[in-house]
Length: 129
Ligand SMILES: *[C@@H]1O[C@H](CO)[C@@H](O)[C@H](O)[C@H]1NC(C)=O
View 1 (tube, rainbow, N blue to C red):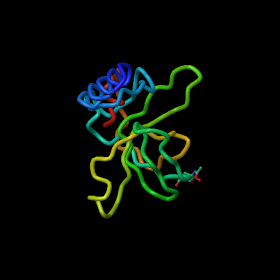
View 2 (view 1 turned 180 degrees about the vertical axis):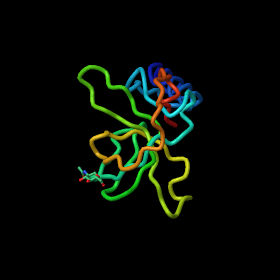
View 3 (view 1 turned 45 degrees about the vertical axis):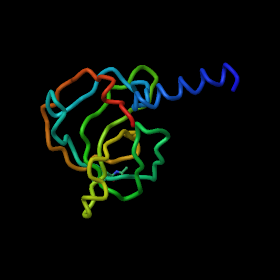
View 4 (view 1 turned 60 degrees about the vertical axis):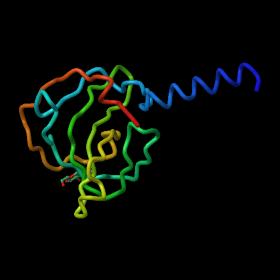
């Protein structure tokens, strides 16, 4: 086995041990219902199919309902992204799957919280595994 290959294999092992995939933050701040972002801010209806481009995002289908948990405050020139999960009658199907999607993909139909708060995002907000 050649020397560079051994090094590559070691680096690969290290990355596997680390587990998480490092992804860039989509924004530095977000709007939430509370400081912990634990409450659903609003309910929205999906206007078009959306295929998640990477593990930070979730897939959406036309007509689905989504719970919105946070709204990223867009950086200059960047798109507007919200985080949420798809509402399903068969709750187990979607349970725990939270991810980002473009705000333009949904129509907000019901607001649950009026007094929202601005919270700084952390790398954990964009954690993938
Ligand atoms: C969003 O929902 C409202 C109320 O249900 C509706 O009147 C409006 O046409 C919808 N907008 C879009 C872009 O579908």
